[in-house]
Length: 343
Image (cartoon, rainbow, N blue to C red):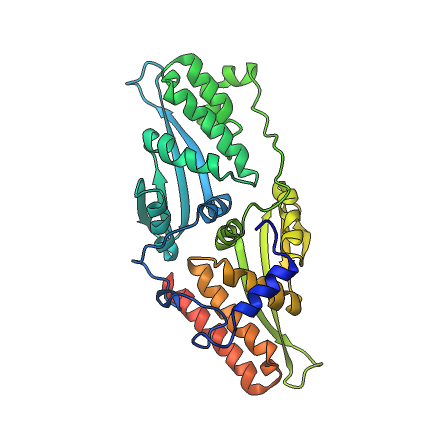
């Protein structure tokens, strides 16, 4: 599915009756309802994993002093996803998807899935992202990272020439080089400019599950209640779905409007761009049915479940009554409470 056409979305809406599943606006596995399971292992779709990595993943190369090596430096490759600890269950599922390799660890308020074995990176991680490519600017980091790993696989990182080549590529990877590395390799960097970060943005979203994964990392389902003199109850309720990204991914974000057939793209700061949909008919007919079919996971699934319950109340005009408005407030209050308890 390359785009959520109106006909496809409407057919999904007909198949999934909002009123029939435990009073929830879509079918959610029982272990997820307001308590995303920390033990259940789910089978993830490959495109979900890629989409989530486009949102939250990191391909990086560590370089540190090591007098045991002839070059005086140690090079190590890592694939990492870091989240708030409340989403550790999702990292466990991602680890399971990759065959149980790597480590999932909780440190303070953060949890991490890290793969540092060069053999596992070559045999498991790289084949996945070659078969299901990233589509954001993170693809540039992946390609540089993969090139460095090729040098390491050939053992050339143990030579001065290979190390210098890695440093040049690392200067364009992620946030670049630390001051220590820049000073230590000043001559190498002065005679060899940074690698070019050119790329061709994807012209379309590769699969609905990519969007589910990306939304699980970067998306936001929100419910706003604000005073209004135009409503009898004195308040208006507005729903919205949005995804924000760095401006470098503006062209990728521009495909979201055609993918969903709704919403707008706008810059909301000097270096950030946002996809946003607040029109209720679009949310109800296009956005919600799409994510019922391609569920976001982790804590975002719980947010979506609350979002869907409020949407059902709005569809039935319940928000125009005191009772309905109070129901919406309770949904928001419970969501806020559960989010605080999960921290």
